[in-house]
Length: 129
Image (tube, rainbow, N blue to C red; front, top):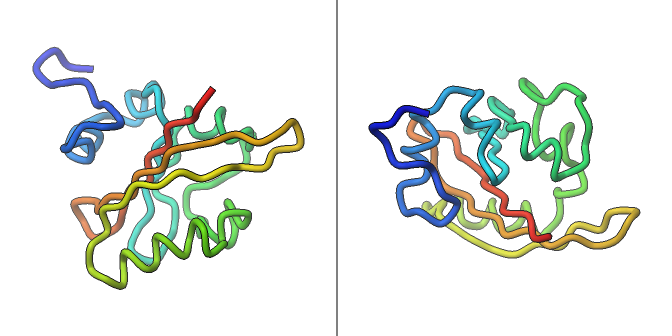
């Protein structure tokens, strides 16, 4: 990352601006997951950290609908319902906790959903250890 900008942090107010100024390689190196969707819910960026932490392997994600093709397990009232409700209110700036039920056991994640600069949105995930 360049030396003239502040490193992106999950909890920083301007995390979207910081991430959107990064290369994909820099986004991949973030200590939290970053997924960018366009306005229709199609994945345009999916970070290496999110791949690793979600234990979802290397299958293709970019160009696919996030909730129906990439992560149908998140097409629930507790996850997608929150995102859709915030979007419908016109205030897509939410943070919530979610528990993934993996075969190896449950794993908690804190999720931030924020508007992207071009009409889509970012989902940032801080995975608890």
